[in-house]
Picture 1 (cartoon, rainbow, N blue to C red):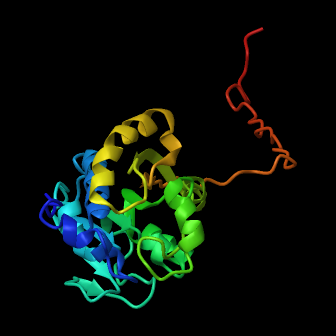
Picture 2: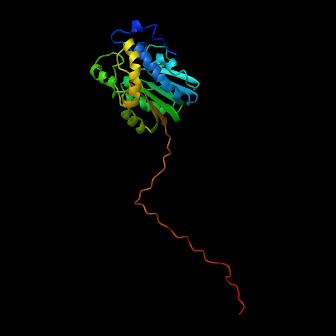
Length: 259
């Protein structure tokens, strides 16, 4: 599924400074977190159908992360130097309106200079009832606490913005999206040491049960709603009931009756 952590444990325990997010996911902590994300994401992908899917953010990880996607064609869009299908320099997506069945934003909002603009573009290209999946770090966790002190560093995974699930739900609801699921992943300490990761799996079960809010990752699933707009009459407008015209009877006119 992913690169075996046992083969690169010693070399990845100490990472160079200022690494990109794609490279950070090759570390022991990143591999464990990515596997946990994938195990929860597969539940959504197995019930998603259509013709076109789009992945934005961490483009080099998309093939492995979305390998269970049942949608026929998957395209990767980003700003990096990876093997992309389309390379962009802004939040504007060069895709037609109402043409995409599924969009996955994998750390795209936290790394974007204009997250609102990116969400508007996603809303534009999704078909009616299309799905949007947002995967990003959770600020209400130990990961968010470390991000609070190291966000000034241009170093993954602490660079960028951490948005709460509530804020993401508010942003998407303003665009007409309906929340379907909220999964959480990564119940472990934000320390990149192989031995500590192995021992923290026991703690992760406890945290998932009793401290559900403290996960490292929020995985939110939305659906694009299409509600028809119907005119609403003002209450102060009174409907005037106009009586129909009375038709005079013509039968019997000019007829003679027997006395």
